[in-house]
Image (tube, rainbow, N blue to C red; front, top):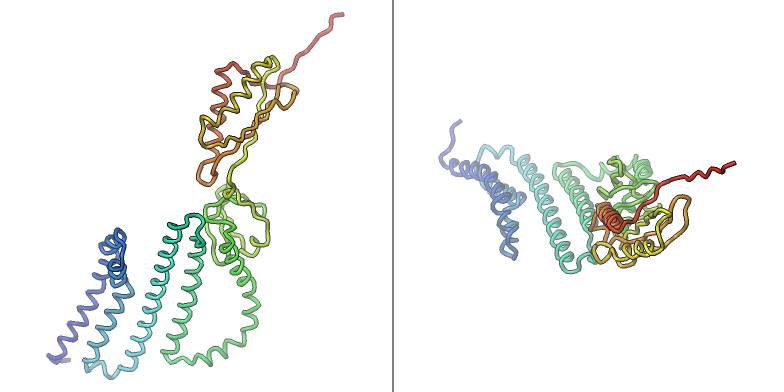
Length: 345
């Protein structure tokens, strides 16, 4: 087949635009992304937009569309080519729209977080859920639109599928309940990713809040998926959200401890907040009772901001401080002992 010299330029432009596409995408994902991440402003936001993958593909589609119109050997297949281009363009447009909405939501979240901190009305889990819902709706519309462009009778298709609509609706009841439950959890801010919670007899950390289930990483490192509807209808204890963590410790001193040393022990315990910034001043240290083997001290303290601090580590530090100070003061911890008195005949 001989190629008309006038067709060489359109063919070269078509091939060039196709070959240029990967290069522009690479530029958008690496140097341009690095540049726009380091700078703010309308110009850099616009630069990031025009080098996004959907925008680059749209540019190639437009250029290639106008070039192939000038190729005579495409004319017999013009209708099919047009439909194919329209379907690809619709998919790419939806892709671009999804990315744009994601970007807008991310910027709104960052601004709200920077301005209001933890009091922000936007939660990262809520943002992720909104993204998923918007993405699902848009891609569903893209599917319907594409089928229509390909000549599929949507009305007839809906009528055909309507026969099983009742069965599908019944089967989807639980899914809808779980979806509403997930939105309820996110809107109420009952829990967040990373929180340690207790619910339905499960104690663990929230790994993910999805549209249907919430994944909990139990203390034995097993991942447990709980339907959102079940989680909403159950009592949830959010351990992480507590302002302070209460720690109750019982200490026992030997029975040969004199009253002065007992007072010294209580004074040592009450002075611990001065040396540890992670516990509050609300210390309870009392001579609780006379035990079977020991003089018992009730020691209660509170760890500040358990969400940000490691409560196990702080408990260990307090215990170590008590051990060191009691040893230095000559205070002896009791252990189970028995004194046997033998009567002489």
